[in-house]
Image (cartoon, rainbow, N blue to C red; front, top):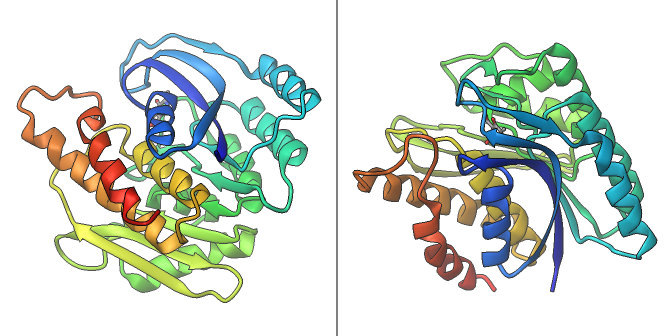
Length: 279
Ligand code: PXL
């Protein structure tokens, strides 16, 4: 069985980061290993969250894995929460990467043109280092603009997406995939580019008139797990986009859905069905 190490926080309540990544990775038939960067009582949309940083413990855990000969087919990073957390990830990539390891980076730091609470320019600068060593980076448009020093625009077109991806590839990403990239009215999806030949690809879904917390984590963990299962990159992103869109629809259909996250639990069987067509 393939094995993914995912490095991100545990938000104990709130359905995001590891509490989404682990069930998705398991449902995809991949062994999930976690390295929590921090423990949060809830995610940071709750105004009064409590946080315990684990950045000082992370390296000791990783060293014990290394000493026991443990290896990973992929390292998938999400919300890291501190500059020390990013630095530790950079060291871990050096420690565990070999020629077959997929380094999949979701540079979680903002949305809708703004940084999440607790992050600053220094954090953005350090995140660029992660971009430089990634096989795949999957920023949303806010994150892509911040990483590349590009103005965040509301009016967007294919040339804007291609320029952003080109800059991310220039920085060192082997493949850059933008999320939330709309190519026509009423649609949204992904727009990606491979650095080797600058070939672009995209996949569009009907835009759903709602946005929920945790959907980026759902998308990234699905795509990372699909790629580790050997599904071709374009298909992996198609599955991740369709599964995320379907989960948003299912959440909207539930009149009692929580405000803080998506009902991905109800759509996990669908994910297994969708992925099985490619396996
Ligand atoms: O879903 C991204 C995420 C992960 N973890 C924490 C967050 C967020 C987004 O705000 O606050 C703690």
